[in-house]
Length: 94
Image (cartoon, rainbow, N blue to C red; front, side, top):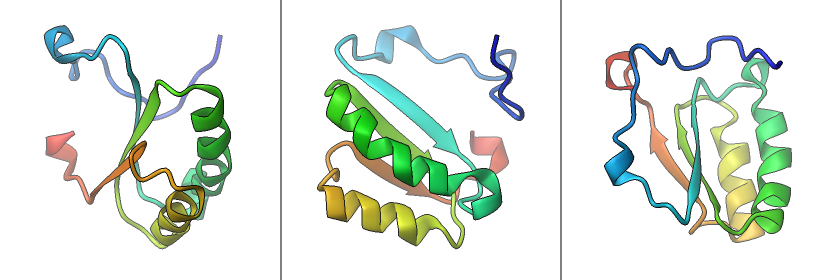
């Protein structure tokens, strides 16, 4: 069993299954993009996941001083078609 603190409350968030692409998996990250939140780990893990699993995409919402590190990684690894940035997302919009 793995516990992810501050994860999605399933009582408040229920995706519409009819909008799901059955051939793709989207990893959604909504957070302040700062070191304390583990963004450095995200920068390190996205490229190997994308290489190992061609059906996986990332959707990243948030802003912070580590956003540039993510953007540089996406550019360096040429993952623009696999990683999308939403920018700041208000809590009520999540």
